[in-house]
Amino acid sequence: MTVANYLLTRLLQLNVTEVFQIPGDYVKHFTQALEYFEGIETIGAINELDAAYAADAYARTRGLAAVSLQYGVSTYSALNAIAGAYVERAPVVVISATPGADARNLTDMYGMLFHHSTGNLAADEEIYRHVTVGAVTLSTSEGAPEIIDALLIEALTHQRPVYIACYKEVWAEPCAAPSPEPLQARVVKSEPRQLENAVAQAWSMISAAKNPLILAGVEVLRHGLSPLLEQLIGASGILYTTTSLGKTVLDEGGDKFIGTYSDAASAGAVLDIVKASDCVITLGAIMTDDYLLLVTNKYADMVLCTTDSMRAGYFKYEGVGLKDFMQALLLKFETDKAYPLKTIAPPPPQFPEPWVSASDPRWNGQPEVITFNRFFQQLTKFWNDNNLMKDSVLTLGVSSSMYVATNIYGMAQGSFVSSAAWQIIGYETGAAAGAQLGSGKRAWTVAGDGGFMMLCQSLSTLSRNNLDAVIFVMSNGVYAIEQVYVDVNSFNDGPDAPPFDAFDVLPKWDYMALAQAFGAEGYRAETVSELNAVLAKLKTRSSKPILVEVKIPEKDLPQQMKRLGNEQFPGPIVSY
Image 1 (tube, rainbow, N blue to C red):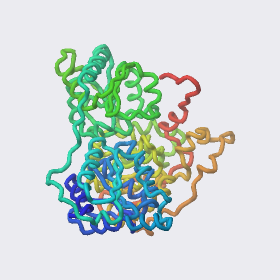
Image 2: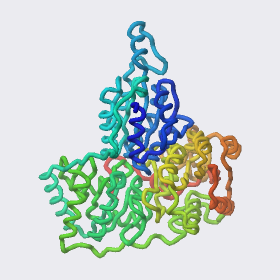
Image 3: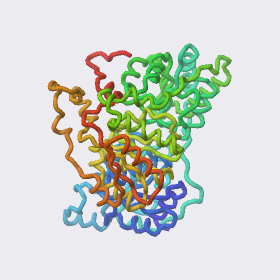
Image 4: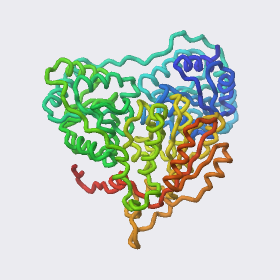
């Protein structure tokens, strides 16, 4: 048993059966151990962002992930992705190695600067402390098992990344074998009196409300609290929605789910219910500036509990855990005779809604023009007609497509993987491999052409590993989401419309040639009929990734994005 095999054994016990990897000389003892370790497959990635985005999506769909990186040049390149995993609660184990004891002695003797180093050999660990819940560099195998266990427990407890590096030689040094029992998250108990006070204040708000609403967030899913949320909804009878990042915290449907709430990008009926709510019970939600209007207008009417904080209206409480609060609230609902409420969510929009009303009205007389909304109209119809929704996982970076996609209704639990809080352009293509391997479902990715250009090499990783993920590139030649926030008027017609900013205009790519170069199947759709013909071909699974260029007008502006772009906050925050 070596230190490398100890870590790999612990990962396998936690159902990590793939490790994403970028090779390097310092980390060679770990990568060689990984190559011959039975039960875990090495997934060689093309670059660091590709590897780390894939690990992030794997963690979201499997529960834990690992990525092996070279010191310095590799860990620094992956930092953006690990920061996103930290913000959005994806427990990724970042594995690396530093110059060893021999190199450090040479540095002390001769002042030598070793390759990939800034001169501060502790810099990697110091930087990763900002985006992990634990960062350690081992200089010896002494105590390594206990340190590795402690780090993994932190990752499981907080559902966030950890970083572990060793001096180069330490990965190959012997150590004690791990126990046969898998590690488990620490049980974090609430401070009893604070919990009691928090529940009492929350209950006074909930019981006085005429239109309470549950807003569920991603922490519910990450911490395995979805069954508890389901019990809460059943016992209370209260309608519920989710944040964009928390979309698919439960299987979507039933008579209590109103649809996903994405502020101005929401479907109209969802917006109306949220506006009318006089008590928003917010559970496990990361409240980003996408929800600025909600928080500022509903602050006094919000009960907000996450793994980090708890408040009921204006009252804040320390040391109250999300699980404990949800369990205490459930007990209240089960014992109070005023519940369950008899509210029933309005039926979801009947197909082809919400897509028709949200599509850019300029193309109303041109039914063959593919718009953002018409694309999702055809994709969701294809999934439903072929019973594919339950077997699909959708990956999205921040783009116009992500906000439009939140209007999809009926997805399975854990099948919507997006960068809705950290908001990385390009995440979606790198995430495809991890989402498919982690979930066992087919990955469907919708990428902006600008985002795809950042991570197009990920297509090669998919091909190399025989993964038939589908990558749709929304080809309009412009960073549409960026231009919306720079000047939404650029999407207007006529001579008075300001031009797109030069930095938002993209180069033209030959996507079909690129697909061939990377070993993928390539298709192009310029009309709705062509798109449906391509979708029909995708019913049959293959051993190759599929790249589909979806041609849309440069100035197509989905109404979801138009509403977001027109939301202005000059001076005092505007109200609903």
